[in-house]
Length: 168
Image 1 (cartoon, helix red, strand yellow):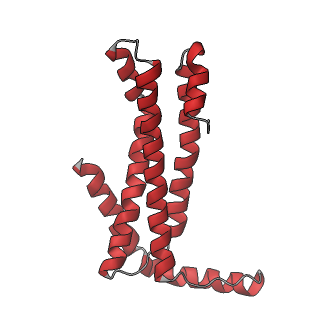
Image 2 (cartoon, one colour):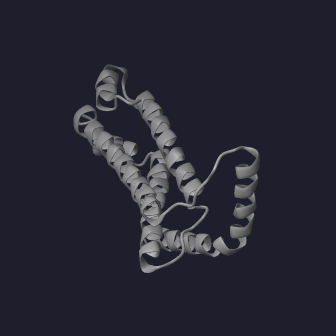
Image 3 (cartoon, one colour):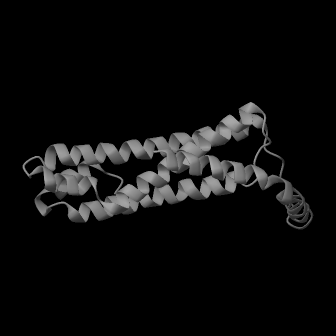
């Protein structure tokens, strides 16, 4: 439990330290885009910054909840007649554990970055790109997990599984 927390804090601190070297580079890119592509980028204000991070944390929380709701529904209804060791195989599925750890990391990282900003640290310039990429991967991984787990469901139970997880 302490290792993921430590890693999330370490990543947040590293992101905070990247602001100084990246600031001139981003200024040059912004100037190039403003002059050549006729798109004007403004800087993100504090409210939008916090809203983006809190929204991403909420998205992560929703997908974690959906994953466990699907697992508990499958365990409770479809696999109820199987022995516990067979039901536990679904909970120990490798890709699902990696997915949950990944989502938990990005959700917690978003909350750490919000708390850093509340305490008075500078906004992190790479945060929007990194968090959107991470949550995007989480969304598509959820679809992949649904497809993989639906293949593992017995054929007679597939209709029930797709009723429980209509996204897949």
